[in-house]
Length: 629
Ligand code: XCC
Ligand code: SF4
Image (cartoon, rainbow, N blue to C red; front, side):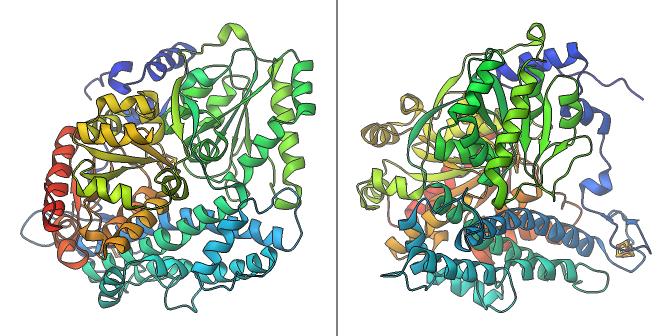
């Protein structure tokens, strides 16, 4: 076999901190995702095209769509059926992740209501009352705990089978709801749609690819308009609704003379407690006793986004920085909950003095220190975790420490409530700016890193190209740190924006790239689109908006992309899902869905060309609304 060429650090990432740590990892003999990708390349082409099936033991089957004779699996499933089933299960996996995260927040609210925890409380009572009223609960003049109790019931019911539609569908413009009704894809219950997808894709059930895809849309809609949305809204109620604040990003946020704790995963339930414990003077005193000048908490991935939005805790990095952050040699503990935590981190941590600490029974890692984290005992457990990190400080070898860069300033905290407040309480100033063509439209850039793409090259390249075209960029998830590290998340970045966007963001004192949270917080963007569509009396698909995930990797990203398209928002992906083996499925995704839900997927690896696609799209949408292109 031909010798594989080792990539240079510059080819692997655009960031200086990543490049420095890739070099250090090689020197320290630490394996990274890029190394393993090389091992796995070339990938199985059947799997890449979605043409392998393991849904029963008459197989596994893999079929070729080429040749005159249409190949079939043992059961007779053809390429369309196999690809659609695989994609359906892929989306269901993503919806399950987000939504189970949402459910965990209902459980914490329930523990608060039942008085089983003193460590959590309702921080934003006004918001809780407001969303309760939105979903039909009498909130006026009642005790907040009574209202919260009813809200727990309504949200739990959203996961079940007794409803004809999930609670937050009340937010969706009537035109959009009619489209979903006519297609039979109104999301009824989160668990129900996910379970039904598993059922449909069992051998001998849904053998009509378009029908399976429509249910994938329904499953994703249950995520976007229920599971994820509940996750976002209850996180705000329990931990506070984010407000604009400054923070920092990149590996430079780690501190040489302090106990460094990284939090990684998704749910603020654990990390908010770690945050409190790490700020407790008594515990800081224990760190001082070990010779550290303090305790430094920093975030990775989405739980980092949650803490950043609400508490201003700095961001050490995004998905492909998780191994590299440990390679600094400066991390005493990495505390994780679930999702996107590479199993390799246990090995990476073991190459240094870093303790790898898990907190969720549904996400245990062999070789980790595990805490069965519960609402009843959360604060005590968080203190124990922080003390474990403090104990580790004395075993740090400062000669092996390398903190490669100085941190970059970022601005965060743009919840919809904060955006409305910044606009003086009404969307009108924003809509006026859009009508005047100063802000031509908005694109949400969301999602991950993928070692198949030079880290953050597309995330950043697209963001820069869009703001130059007077298109406001909204970021969540791992694109946050990408944009932050290159200086796009500060008001000063308006110098890189087009004249209209520069004027509006300049007068509001906000960056042209606005951070709206974690990946479940894409529900904030959906809600904002619904608010704008309702204000204008149009459907979401009429708005000059788009969405993109240039470097995506996860099932969750596929679920997000699918609910965005089903909600009427065109979605750009930097690379396709594993569906190209079916012309029917690919044709629907790229073209056919347009006639059904008013939006499609667009695949384009080049971020500049992708920006051109959005430029055209937004121009067309603006013209259709009677506005200048
Ligand atoms: Fe995971 Fe949410 Fe992707 Fe980042 S962006 S790699 S899904 S952490 Ni959600
Ligand atoms: Fe093969 Fe059909 Fe079984 Fe899939 S369900 S493994 S295609 S026999």
